[in-house]
Length: 178
Image (cartoon, rainbow, N blue to C red; front, side, top):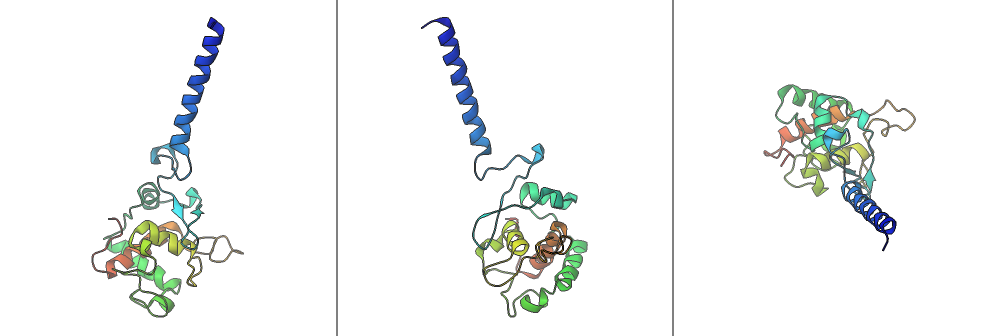
């Protein structure tokens, strides 16, 4: 084989190896590292298990950014956040279905240890359920989804994390960050 053919084969092999590495790091279901500006977690809708795309720009507070990067709710155990979460829970009429202590009424209890949707034992799972709604009749509460005619209507990621902190404070030690 001549030098030019060998060089061409070598270049093609290097390109193929480079493409394989890129596919492995950005393939379906993979996420960009948090320090690359992309989310480290991927969301899945509770209704159909399909990917759930949430604009990363909505995660505009340090706590929301941390959650997007790690899936952990930094408001768990924070008394101020818990108090605000309780107010938001009432503001969005969550009490009508889930009761004043989130232990269930017409809708299921949210405090655990058992959940209507088992993924709600994690903060990421509960976030997905509340943000996009359920098969069981709960509509989406996420910003822009609650009322599709009003993109400013609905709960923000930061507010939702505070609601979760309050819900977790009502349960039996389950933080969702396990």
